[in-house]
Length: 430
Ligand code: UD1
Image 1 (tube, rainbow, N blue to C red):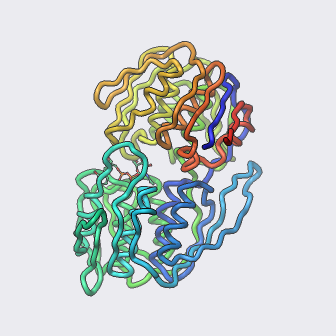
Image 2 (spheres, rainbow, N blue to C red):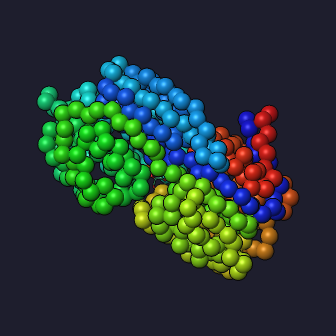
């Protein structure tokens, strides 16, 4: 199993190309199930989660053609992929495939909308909370679907004339359930109104792609989305938006180590609240023509309190990385996690590097220390594992991050991108 060895202490200087967003690419790929024409996606990141979803889509009958392509002077390795699903050959998404990645459950929306039925295994994914699917089921029921849980699977059936437009108010904001509702309602009869919808940039990206395919979606990016159903969707060409979590992660890495890095091909607007937290913590962030330039501002790392919230609030997917940064702040900071109930597994690993963190319910209290010391640590989930990399970059001596497969799910060529900027990072394959 691969490990990553980091020898800490180097500043980061140079250019890091930001990849296409994993969390946008996954729902966009799933949208290819909605049409018999070809959906072409550009800037698809090369990640384990994307490969896994390609297998799942193949199982439903999607033909995939990949154009390898190096993009931009910074050489991002994202690819253009053509997806064609002439017919859906199987409406079952089996446990062996779905249990590996939660987002694969989202195929339930397109399968139900296009074929009138789906049998989809209940999902797996990162162990960061119970992560139920009740909102998906309630939402699909509002479109007329009949649902039952049987042997770990959800059996879903549309009315004989297909799904019907409906009205659903989310009791809690869910990114995935918003994606699924938009996809399913696009092919429903009549108009659907979704309230308290997720406002994440990835939701807007999916709506833009669906509209390019002929859907009639208005309001994505606000809490109220209206979808006028159409009888069929066509193919389209769409570019996956830049990864805001990767952007924020490298910005925090620079704030941690010091240096001067341009995050190429990304935008400040995608980060909103998180960028403000990074600025307050001690980095100067400027929007340049090629991307975001991050420079440590010379005042050291300042303690900043954050609370994770749905977009535009501080993202839960940057919580672990920000905690790593706060371990070196010059005071006490507090991080409150409101999205997932069990997303503090990185705390004990950061403590192995010398961090002083105490937990009380959903709040972590971080007392900044003057230095971290390298140690072997264990990656426990995708974002937690990259927080250990950030900490390792600033720690004295050698940090060995085990279970790197979590990182490979969501960070394209991480060690290469960091090494080019002067970090001493190496992958060790046993
Ligand atoms: C997506 C992101 C993930 C991010 C999360 C929150 C992808 C592939 N993943 O995950 O990286 O951390 O948004 O920004 O885009 N919930 C329910 N019932 C449901 C669905 C969700 O209670 O039916 C709860 C979840 O347990 C969680 C909260 O709602 O507490 C938010 O989850 P959700 O927004 O659905 O996360 P994902 O779409 O799975």
